[in-house]
Structure formats: structure tokens, C-alpha cells
Image (cartoon, rainbow, N blue to C red):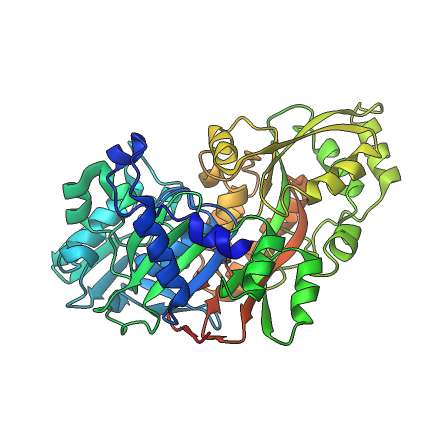
Length: 522
């Protein structure tokens, strides 16, 4: 039964140093089981299902929705998003001002914000340390380009001055992201060294408590949180990869939040259950078949256009996903104000696909290696896409990689293709720069190695006028879809199910879950 699985998996790794973890150190089974049983009986514990294991507690390094759902509870940024409408609001910043030329941001920090674990007050020195860590040329973050050319000066303990190399109308979004913008404790990292990686220290609403790889992450309420102590004493992010198992766990109230459910059948069953609340919201996420434009024959635009015509995206959305996703014509989703469908279109047309393949010199088709990740539904819908491609003569070798292996392979920059569904902010620059700008070249997520819209995206970033900026994003989308470095398969929707005793759980349109304002009653 699911209950016994959740209770008996229980070797919670209680802040072991990295060296001990490497040697396979374990803690006693009996206390872990007793701890798990105690958790199950408390109403001040909220258990959130995650579908894949956390791979890092370092927010500045490659991120997944699971990593992010931990990071947003443990860390804060200077700014953040109000998840009701994804507008920017101050967090660690108390106020800010911008120079007339748009290059200098002077930020006043909140006083008295304390790091977890007795690591002292958060100051401008920690902000400088964190941002320079992202920009470190010896070990850069994949999001280092968000701060490209920026200099950081500490005016005093609670004032930091950020000077940009060029105007960036989207810069507040760069300071609101849950990736590069989260603030770390310089003292904690300097004192703990590598052990910090498995004992993260932030200023967030919850402190890291324990991690059991392959099982769960446990977070404890921060009594001194500057926005007010959360009502829930303890969060558990519980790994249940298989969605049917997660459904049973929710029905048995062994978990409280089924986050980011994907299966249409499961969504339908849970929506029909009076004891379960299913919420949904449009997401700022589009899912793509990415084509490496430097690898033959994908370096031929006619081949890429042929592949776009070969994929029956309408059927994928309506039949495979049963309408739980929506169509998009570009890498942006229709939720973005800057979205346009006035772009080259690729309706399902196998005859047109064969015609373009013949024109490109591939009348007999070609061999194509399609790479995807072992995570539902990303290991499932590529089977449907592969079948579409095979119908026009493209011989598909579908390769499914485990999550960490897949991430490393993409970072190497050598894959011919990839499945990608990057989570994003409400800023179109974040998605487009990561997916189809040279700033996102591996180890970033631009597996297509496409740079054809760089000039337009750079010009849009520099425009202060929102209408002019929007027009440039429209032009960029037209250029991208003429070149087809990715085939946008669908725009996502975020479904979250809770039992009737849960209130106040928030989800982000960028695909993370936030339990800061949550309560639970079993």
C-alpha cells in the first residue's frame, strides 16, 4: 500500500556532510520510521507530491520544477512575483531607484532579515557575493547572461548599486527570477564549503531540515521570517514518480497536494471526486521538439519545416492530452502579452512534408535520433510525435534518458535533438533568450544552437517603450518560426489537486508550488 511505502522509505538524511553521503553513510532506521509516523499524525505538516527527485539545492545551477519548489521556500530574492497575477513585488529589497539612463539600479535592502542556522543578517555583501557567484567565469551559472556586463558595488550594509553595461527594460525580471536572483549566505558557503550543497542556507519562509534522496525533502518553518511565520510547521516534498500512485496517496490523504499532474484520465477522475479540489491555470510554458541546427540534415531549414508539417499537433492536444493543453504558434504561449500568431504556420500536412523533404534532397527520408527525458509525460508523447514523423519517411530512434543523464547530455551541446519545456517568468525575454538566443547555448538550454533572432531580441531588451518592445518581439517570433529551430508542440496548463482540508496553496504560472500561505486540516 502507498501508506506503508511512505512510512517505511524513511531514512531521512539529517544534514549529513557531503563526504558522509559520498561514503554511503546512513542514519538509524528506527528513528526515521518514528519520525515519519509522527509526521503522518500531525495537522501542521503539509505533504506535496513531486514527480522527480531534487537534483540540487543550489538555485544558481541547472534547475527543475522540483528544485524550484524547494528553492522558493528556502531562499528569497530582491524581488519576487505575486503569484495571483505574476506582477513583480519587493522581497529582500525595501525600495529601489533607477537612473535616467536606465543603467544604474540603487537598491535599499530590508534591515534585520536573518539567514537560517545562525548565519547572521543578510546584507549587501551577500547580494554582491551571490550575483558574482552567478557571473563567475570559472563556474558560470546557466543564467549568467542575465547579468552580463553588470557591476556590483556595496554602498553600505543595506544598499547595493547595480550598474548595467547597456539598458535592459526587463532587468527587474532578472532580479525576480527563482534562478540567478536568489540570495545566498556568503558566510555559510565560506564556512561549510562543499557541505553547503546538501545543507542550503537562505532567508526564506522555511529552513532546510532533511533530505532522503529518492524519497523526500523536509523543510521546517522559519520562526523569524520577515514576512511573518508560515502557518504550516513542516513541509514535506514527497517523491512519487508514478501518477496513479500519487492519485491513491491523495485519496488516502497520505499527501495533501498533488502538484503538476499531467495524466488526462487522472485529472478527469479527480475532478469528479467531491472530496478533491482540482485547480488549473494557464502556464507560461511551451513544450518543444528542439532541432540542433548545426547537425545534418537538421541544418537544412527545409528539413526542419518538413518536420513541422509532419507533426499532428492538433491531434496531440485534443486526443493524447484530451484538451488539457493548448496550441501555440511560437515558443511563447498565448498568455504572454507579446505573443503573436502572425508568424509562419505549419499545419499538419504530410504531403507538404514529403514535398519539402524531396526538395531538400531527402526524398527517401533520413535517420533521426529523438532524445527525451524519463519523466511523464515527456517520455510518452514523443512516441506519438515519432509515429507522425515516420509516416513521412523519417526513421526515428527514440532515446529516453534518466533525468540527470539527460541534463548532462544537453549541457554537453552535442545532442541532435531534445524535448524541452522550460519554465519561465512573465518576461518573454527570459524564455526566448534561454531557448533561441546565443546566450542560451549549452550548457544552457538552446540545444538548437540557434542565433538567428539575436539582433531582434537584443533590440527588444533595450527598448523602454512597451509597444515598441512588443513589436520587436513579434518580429523575433516571425523570424524564429521561419527558421524553425524548435517545433512548438503545445502550451502547457498547470493542474494541481488537493484534498478538501487544504487551503491557501499557490501555484506559479511558471510551474512551481508555494505553500507559504497554506493551511491544512485532516
